[in-house]
Structures are given as C-alpha cells and as structure tokens.
Length: 158
Image (cartoon, rainbow, N blue to C red):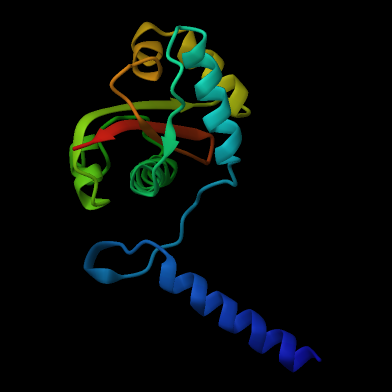
C-alpha cells in the first residue's frame, strides 16, 4: 500500500511540475504563492465595480494570473514592494512573458495585510488603486498573494 501511494504521489508531483511556470533558461521554479479563492476575488471585484455602475463582471485570465503570480513571488523573495521586478521587469514585460497582448492593463500591489479583505479595503481607500479596480476598460483579472504581498493585474486583451 505504501509503495502504491508513494508512486501515485510521485506521478502526481511530476504531472504538476510539468504544468509549473518556468524560470530563466527553462529551469523549474516553485511558486511561493498562497492559496487564493479566485471566485471570491472575482465576486469582490464585481461587487465593488457594480456599486459604481459597472455591471459586467470581470473574467479570470490564466495569463493575467501568471503575471500576478510571477510578480508576487518575486516581491516575496526579494522583500521589495515595487512595480518593477528584481530583474527589471515591468507590468508590460510580465504580461508579454505570460503571452497576454494588452490593449489595457493596470497593476495594484500591496504588502502587510492579513487577508484579501484587508488588501481590497486598503486599495479602495487609495485613489490610484481604486481607479484601477473601477477602470471600465478592464475585462479580466488575475490575483495572487505570497509572503504577505498581493498583486492584482487587470486587463483587456487586444
């Protein structure tokens, strides 16, 4: 039984590793990300936007999710809260790396909040972050948390 369980876990680990994002030179890197209820984040965004007359909910984008996760992982590793990655990456370059062609893009970052609710409360209390969340041009989102850092990427593909 232990052998079958171990081989099953090994097969699952290998299958998941094949789906993991790659780093520089194709080297696999593990995400530091926390588990996030993406449906709850989408619902929160829809509620905030509907309160401002934006009735159409945002759709989740795997590419925007990848861009958000890459940046939050980088900030958690470097300990640096910045829109510029430790390797000099920008929102535009992260979107390009994720395969997302953006006609509109915006990024919110945060650090130190205990949970997603606190992150959104802080963002809605900040003019620029609020403007991004309520941008009528946005149709999709990705959201990630790691090591006390949070990243929301909003976009509309071309």
